[in-house]
Image (cartoon, rainbow, N blue to C red; front, side):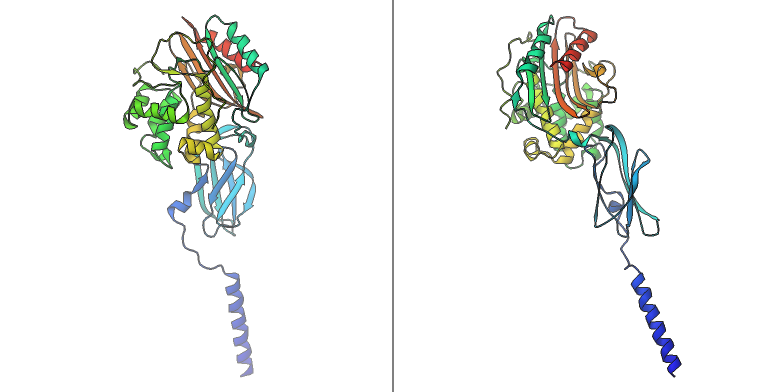
Length: 386
């Protein structure tokens, strides 16, 4: 009898120990949980922070960049998994893989075509102090050129800027497609990458497609809607009078309207200024860093601003669509750029993500018979001025 009771006690203790070792049964992860990478989202520009939803049963995780594991596996604590990446700025695919305690893969989450930027670039100081030295250097370059030039440079780390002729109205060419991009990203909501209009957005920003810009314009309320957006964003010298001809293209008081000593001839109703383009680019970059004031002005969420920045970073620097100072930079330096060109005008408005020095650089040039090589020489001098 006693032997039987002892065996029963041993069995009960063994069962209790087994239960203690067992994990409670977890519900199977949903399809959305299996793929939910919160940051970055596909097409985003981001500053190294990766955030994902950890599925039930996840014990460790690893991050892959372009298929190569970044660092060691990391313990998962809590529902949200976070890690910060580092390395040279580049376009890449990011994947997070989750494993259970036995090392078996539980799920993965992925974002393709994202732009990894330096953490140091996640600064967005608005224009604060005008540098007389930089402005004088920009002026000297402009006045040595036998044509009309406008220039604006803003250090995003310090807010120090320089400018010449920055409020003069130039024929805008394709620069004002930035307004169409911002209106479209606002209209498409929290996940513009999933929209049917994503193809046209990419074509307009990557190749400066006039046809794509016109298709988007028809869905956004026409030219009047873009001009209202310019007024709301403070781009007071920019206009969008109508569609493009298809087939012709492959609280910041310092942004004033007072600097226009040398405007070019009025050859187009579609106009912009260097100060306007600098302001629009600052809003996009600041919104991508999470700046609340910029996001409120843009009427975008952070992901939408990061998607817009990713579109500008994906612009193809080939043929006519090359930044006027692209060849003066290390080829690995990311440029969030919009270019514009006509027979007598060539322009670049870009955020230059040089290592340790993110900077907005805008150069507008007008001259009868202007050649690309001549415009590039002026652009390179403007970039190195000061």
